Image (cartoon, rainbow, N blue to C red; front, top):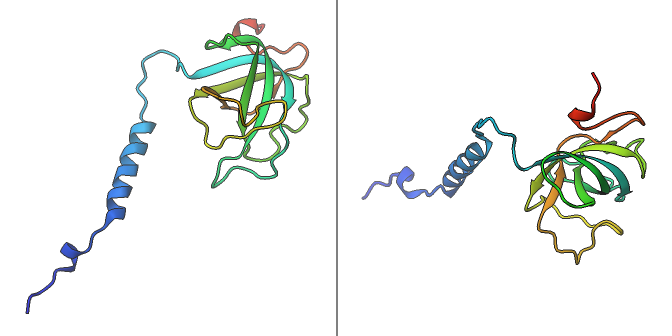
Length: 158
């Protein structure tokens, strides 16, 4: 009778999948410091024109996003030629826009991306028929500015 070696007969596709995922994640996490600022970051001072509806959930296993449309008053870092911008804000606590209202002046930092984890649309901000080639995903908490507050470093007083 021929002896079977179970380790030779059992295929473990999950082991290959896990190895591949670790390789991809570790490559994506490694950043080389070139001394230059990342070109996919945009910081702007803007006026909040419209906030999308509350989604009633927070990010965890899935990314939960809330849309906001801003009038771009001044670009502090990066390049943006438009006068309005739609930003996808990740919702972690559900209180990100607490105390914030339309027409508030804001300091916003976004990551520029060709894709978004989950696309949301909202009346008056982005419709399902809109073709979006570039998404702007908020990187930090929303920061309302006081009447005298400034967003751009060159505007801040010592």
